[in-house]
Length: 540
Image 1: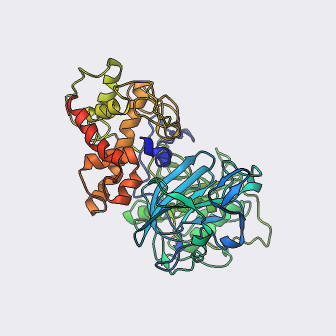
Image 2: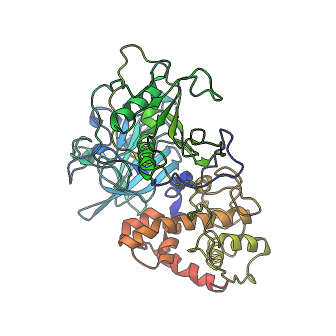
Image 3: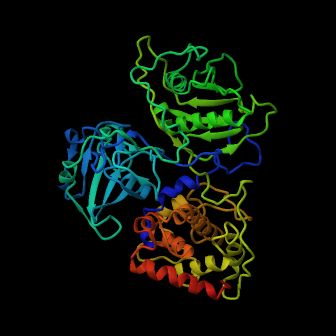
């Protein structure tokens, strides 16, 4: 756990508290929208083999250089062009950290290997909800990964202090490397968007032949009326009309509704032709993926599609059955936007973005087609050497997914906490049974109920609580195993699946992918052997 202070932070996206709005049913669903995966891209990138500036025209907008500053070492270069300026991956690589970080608010770290040279790039001060990659993602140079913000320690505080803090670590950030002056590296790079390829996620359900319209988005006869619609709503309606010729009708403002979205001009309804067919459902899924992937650009607050409430940032849930296809949103996609004001007569709506994303997973727990936790086999846990207060939770933790048995979970907790010590604290501050760093617990941890199910927001509960700690460790192991399964099948990583999963827990999933297997760290190499050995006495 000592090496994962940062690299697990992105898991916060997988454990967001279930959102309950719009009178949802009492039984919420932890499934992701059907047919959708995770990550977003941007068309163009840079020519093959080139490095990309992290922002367009970055070298003309540097505000602070590498070196001593205010009595301490400034390990990077600051680039300031305003809140929301797109930030791009410097080089091809694998994301090893994405999420909360002290001083940075939110950060991303990408590990690179160019001609055998290992280095990492660091991107800091982004806002929550604007990270478009997660740990383990493979990215391309020039790929849109986040946007400029003012999170963390910036001067002056607030939007006026917005900038990208960019670092380069030769030898790798998590592998003992050191920060070097980024300027020589940046001077080797080219402008993002100068490539001719498409850096969007290969598995995206978005049609790769769809292109941006270019120029100002024109009005469309498919939009029933733009009167009384706010700017974000009009931009969405025009972009969908331009990119999806199958759509014939897009509704918007109405004077009276049970909710304020339509009367305020903040919502549109995209009617899906043949919604009851596979073709209609796929069209709706494609439109949802396109809009979700560009949710920040469009200022989306939430979607409803096929009875599922999908926030732009957060966890989706199934709503109550309202009785017909329209009320259940099977025949249309409802999109509500944040306040954006009303356009002037000559307002320029820009052009429709290309590419998009798919919706991130909702809980990090492996689920089957019925969206229920997959139960493991009866592991015949030997509880003789396990404290009584832990037995129930270790047994429940061993039922989250097939890859994590109760004895294995017991072995991990015993090893991590030096003999099931609830208040164990490592020299670097890792805490409790699973040795979670405070920043990690804020994303992975959560209070659980008597059945081991999440009952509190991310970061609630305690790493020293038997229930909270056991279930958090099990959920995280299962999410690692789930993510690693296709990588093992494709040959991207190799080795014993249990050892690969444990290596991800100890060193971070990105490190496993970077090295194609168990990383060559002495601690991790020992860890993947000693945990199963410890588990043997618990029935493993």
